[in-house]
Every structure is written in structure tokens, then in C-alpha cells.
Image (cartoon, rainbow, N blue to C red):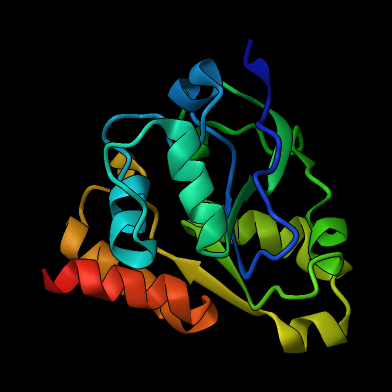
Length: 185
């Protein structure tokens, strides 16, 4: 029998500019109660390049850096049945979505929703997008991005960073300028 899993709470500041949504945390993340905890997940290295997040800082410091950069984290799914960590193992019909639409309606400064991988994009289209009104869809850019998961290792880190760079124009200038300075040194 597949385990019933419950996801992590959102990490979103009131001034969030970009909300990154995964599908459902993997086993390592759920066990550690930390987003993107698997050592081979490339989310944090991508955030180093995108938002000047300190690579080897403690988890709480990385979260604080994300929030200063205007980036929030959550998942489309709050509860589901799944054996293991793979998105493909999520039992269709067992998904209970998080109230993402209600969250984004309350974020007046939100400019983008970044969907981390194909499954997150598919789940978002099915569970969240129908709840978004036209005004919100006009104001907020929804971007499906390649997954940072170790299961998506076919794309190297440089190409992954380049793909995620599409979010830079949606972030505050201070976050973007800091990451550009770091990349130049």
C-alpha cells in the first residue's frame, strides 16, 4: 500500500514576488522537514545563481535569503499517496491540493509562479489554474521550468540555471543585482 504523505508548510513572505511550486516533497525532504533536502537536488545551486542564496549556509539562512530575494516556496499538492519519491508514483486521485489560489490572491506584489518540473505544471493546471481569475492571470506570469530533481539529471546544472534565469525580471532589482555581481566574481 502506498503511504499517505503530508507536505510542508509554505515559506512565503507577504512581499513575495515569485512563488516556486513543486509537486510534492520527496522522501528526503519530508523526513528532514526541509524543502529540496535531497543532496543531489539542484534547487539550491540554481538559487545561488538566481538570487544570491548562500550555497553552504544553514537551511534557515537559505530560506531567509530566498525571502529577501522575493522568492517563496510551496507545493501544488498538500497530501497524496505515493511510494518512494518519484512524481510518477503519486497515485492519481489521491492528491489533495494546497490552497495555492487563495495564497496567491493575497500576494499583491506577486509577479510570477514558477512550476518546478512537468508534474508540478500538470498538477497546477488541473488543481489551481481553474481557481485563478482573469485579473490574476494577467498580473502573474506562470512559468513551467525544468525540474531541479535528481531524477531529471539529463539537463546539466548550467542549462538548468539558464532556464531558471527567466525569473530574473520578476524579482526585485536588489536580488538580481546581487546575483549578477556574484556571478561576475
